[in-house]
Amino acid sequence: MAAGIESWLEQVAQAPDEATLTQLRVRVLGRKGVLTEALKTIGSLPVAERAQAGLDSNKHRSTFEAALAARQLELQNQAEISLTPIDVTAPGMRPQLGHRHPVSMVLNELTDVFWQMGYQVVDGPEIETEWFNFEALLVDKDHPARDMQDTFYLKGGNLPRTHTSAVQIRYMMEHKDNLPIRIVAPGKVYRNEDEDARHSWSFYQIEGLVVDQGITVGDLKGTLEAMMRGVLGDNTQIRLRSNYFPYTEPSVEMDATCVVCKGTGKVFQHDCHLCTGTGWLELGGAGMVHPRVLQNVGINADKYSGFAFGFGPERIAAIKYNVPDVREFWRPNFKFLEQF
Ligand code: PHE
Image 1 (tube, rainbow, N blue to C red):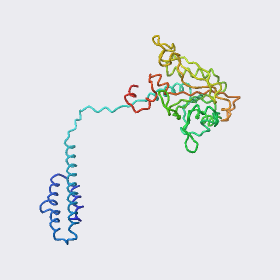
Image 2: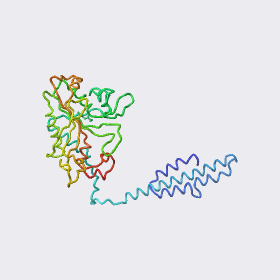
Image 3: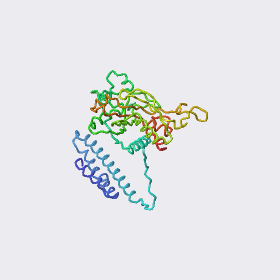
Image 4: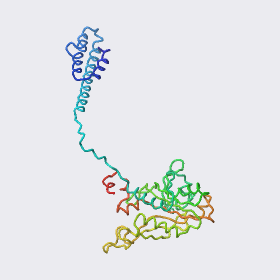
C-alpha cells in the first residue's frame, strides 16, 4: 500500500462524481480495502518494523480521508455553480465611478487658463540636484533663504525638490536659444515641515515662467489676474505686496480678494473667518526673474527679461471648496472626496 498511496490520491483528485468517490473509499478503507488489508499484515512483520508500519498506515489513512473530503467539496461547489440559474434580465450592477480629485480639478483649471494664453505645460524631475533647486536660483549654501524651505536631503546630496522653481532653470537652459518662453509647470514638492491644517510635508505647486523682450511687472500683474479670475471667478481682484525671493527682483506676494466676504472683510458684521477680516487671501509668490538667474542659464539679460510665479493649488482648492484642513485632500477618505 505504502508505495501505492499516490496513485489512489490521484484517482480521488480526478474522480468525476461522488459515486466514484464512494467506490474509492470502499476500495481503500472498506473491510477488504487495500489499507485495511495492509493493516492486517502488520502483525506478521518483524517486531522492529511494526511500529513504523503502524504509523505509516495511520498517516496514509488520514491523507486519504482528507483528499476524499476535499474532492467532495469541490464536486459539490461545481454542482452548485452549474445549478444556479442565470437571470439574464436582471439589471446590471453599477460599477463605482471615480472622479477627478479636487486638487486635480484646480490644477486643470489653472493649466487651461494658461493653455488658452499660449503657454506650454511642462514638468521636471521630483528629485533634484542642489544646483537646480537652490544654487542656480541664487540660493547659496549659507544663504538665509535656505531656511525658508526646510529640505529633506537624500544620501549623496540630491533632494526631493522644495519648489517647482527648479523647472524654470531646466527649461531655460534647454530653450535659451529658442526664446520666447511661456510655460507653466505643475508638480509635487517636498518640505521637511510639521503638518497642520495649512501645511503638509508634500504638496503641489504650479510654477509659471515667461521670458521675452520687454516683459514688465504690468505683464505679471495682468497674467496673475487672468489666472485668479479663471479659477475664483470674474470679480476677483488681486494685489501685489512687496516680498523677497533671491531669484526675483522685485519680488511680490500675491493676494486675491476673499471668496467668502468678497473683499469686504465682514460676514454679517463679523470678521470674515477665512481672511480674518482683511478681505484678502495670500496665495503665492512671484516676481521679475533676477538678471543673474538669466545669466546663469546663458540668456542675455540686457535684451531679455521675464517674470515667474509659484502657487499652491491645495490652498486654492481649500479656499474654493471651503475645506478647513488641507491634509484632508490626501487622506483615503471617500466620504470627503465624493463631495466634489
Ligand atoms: N518658489 C517660491 C516658493 O516656493 C515661489 C516663487 C516662484 C516665487 C517663482 C517667485 C517666483 O515659495
